[in-house]
Amino acid sequence: MYQGNEQQKQRPIVVPGEPVGESRFYIPGSNTLKISDRMFATTVGIVRVDGKRLDVISLKSFYQPKIGDLVIGIVKEPNIGGWTVDINSPFLAFLPLSEYSEKRIRLSRDSIGRILEIGTVITGVIKDVSIFSSPVITMKGKGLGIVSSGTLLNITASKVPRIIGKKGSMLSVIERMTGVKLTVGQNGRIIVHTEDSNIVAKIREVIEMVERESHIYGLTERVEALLAGRKL
Image: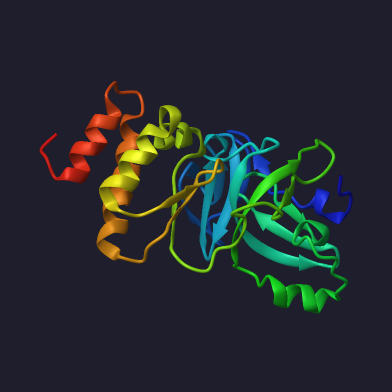
């Protein structure tokens, strides 16, 4: 298990009614309420600042890591012992240098930053989860590694089982009818292995349908009809 400074790197979790900022500094975003010159959270979530906009992202939208899960991560920062990785969770994950490759590598922090640059998309597996430290991921394994092409899409993590379907039925329909392979991470990220804008747009429609109608019986058939261009 990795122990280090990464265990301290977590995003602030707020509760309804908690002050999150002042309107003279930020523009109120989703799940915030402006009263006078102060902004308050309206849900349990994570504070996210994008430029001048401040949002509270509901915890329901985030992924809770489990050992063995396939995840799609985005490299955030190099560290002397590896990299911190955004896995769409309240906590940043850690990819130790020892889990990057089967080969033994001894590098400086600058060299590590050149191997996996900030913003690099990777596929990995959750190797360890602890209440005392960041989730640890590994890139050792068949099909894991740097994602060098394709399009990254997102879905609410709790909807991932529906986009996969029973025994992979939904995923098979999408891949068969679009002719494109998808890599679906349990953390609510999907790699569409094409850069064809028309296909990506159609798959984005499918994701939106699954988000809206995951509770409806016969969803796989409805997705099939959507991809075939039939009226619903």
